[in-house]
Amino acid sequence: MPALNPVVAEVTARIVERSRATRADYLRRMDAARDSGVARAKLSCANWAHAFAGQTIADKLTAMGGKAPNVGIVTAYNDMLSAHQPFERFPAVIREAARELSATAQVAGGTPAMCDGVTQGRPGMELSLFSRDVIAMSTGVALSHDAFDSVIALGVCDKIVPGLFMGSLAFGHLPVVFAPAGPMPSGIPNAEKARVRALYAQNQVDRKTLLESEIGSYHSPGTCTFYGTANSNQMMMELGGLHMPSTAFVHPETGLRDALTAAAAKRAVELARSGEGRMADVVSEKSIVNMIVALLATGGSTNHAIHLVAMARAAGVIIDWTDMDQLSSVTPLLARVYPNGSADVNAFQAAGGVAFVARELAEAGHIHSDVHTIMGPGIHPYFQEPSLVDGKLVWRDGIRESLDTDILRPASDPFDREGGLRLVQGDLGRAVIKVSAVKPENRIVEAPAAVFETQEDALQAFRDGKLDRDVIVVLRFQGPKANGMPELHSLSPALGVLQDKGFKVAFVTDGRMSGASGKTPAAIHVSPEALAGGMLSRVRDGDLIRLDAEAGVLTTVGVDLSTRPAATRSAEHAAGSAWGYGRELFAAFRHVVSTAEEGASICFSGPVGGSTWTDGQPDPNLVDRAVDA
Image (cartoon, rainbow, N blue to C red; front, side):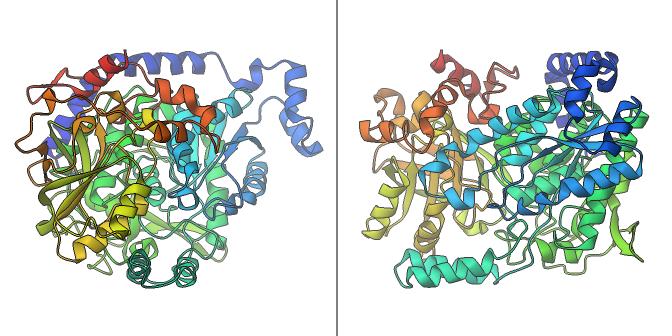
């Protein structure tokens, strides 16, 4: 392999140094757990009998011998999420595969799995981000029985994979294999779906027409086919070495998918027997960097500017948005997948898929090749693709040339010389922006602010024609402390319509915009958030704001925010975010949650170290901490 890109090497070295104490503490704890012995040797006869009371006689006999590995399955199954519906049958496949190797497998527990596509624009969305940490804790509860020698994690979508990842790392002394379900087949073209949504936003088509379009898009078991957070999760699990290779985008209703699930189960048994491949070793500073680079190279979800920070922290690795921004500056953009292009993930897979991306990034020196994975040392197994030959699973090298250069390109001829995510900062704080879907001529906007507290108010202003002008829509009090940091994707069609009319339009918020962030420039996750003393709380209607994604600038123009008092949330808005739809159950979460740049986590909400100054300004993380205190 060629030499590592010097910026990748520099960022990795900085992460290693920043994480020295927390990473050492994490590995010390995992070593102690490993050294305490295998789970089945520690359980008393009564404990073990309880654990297998409901199992088959054959499995009981295997388990009671005391030598067979027992694989714990943590599943996010429900049949409301199309991406998780296939998991209903997976435990049976896993159990049978384990039996073939004289081992056992059990469903250790389940986790919640909510769908942002269902809750989008609804009160339930305010529970969405917090569900990630609930999933992490649910995973911990499932594995707390200490009856397992390895783990299989079944999850696909937005918060589910990050939560499973975080929870599993608490048991990082065990091998953990992630097994996805794959995407649904392609529906109507993404461009047509976007067209109908834009028409509906302008009241030019009725709700029936919109519903028919959406049903044509989301129509069968499997992940939604656009490249949002769910499919970004799968890309990262592969480049992070936690999947069987090239399993991310195989359809659920195929023999190949079941064969890959069985192979994942057998790999979990093999790792349990060998004592190799524990998650604490697979997830390292280098593998985290590989995951970031894979996300950037494919134009992945902005949600991972939050999730990856929390996921890394669970392994004692401390990263921030500056790391992501610097990696983005040297990461070639290899893929154009909707919303960054017209193709979906099925077309991406057909053009070369993950194996092509992995090989290109490794051979161009953009990722670390010397990592540990569930397949063993080195990233090279992830250059392979699976297929069924006479009913047997075989692996072959993936293709070396893209089959469609409108979708997938080599590192030597990328769509762009840098990745799709950038840091913007200034007197309004620090934020991230996804530029891979934003045309260059739309990346710099200087316009008066229109300030709102709710999506509904902003959408009403759009319907009333009050936003038909050059405008930067500011939506504040949407951060994790305020209301759980919901996705605000319901605004996307309206903002797109304004841009299509020829206006200069941008969006600035301390909330999230989702993995489907599209063609309108959006500075999101602004930190510190307005409720925690962030300067968004001091912006007024008409203030001139400059968002320059090229220069990394987010600032007011000709305004001294420091002389103004902070605005407070309306009583109605504050009360509305506190009660109903289960929101009252998460009051403690909102009180203790960390900042967006710290991962918006309650599991890891304490100080995490790092520099105290950024470009001559106090580190926003520390400012936010001071405000909270």
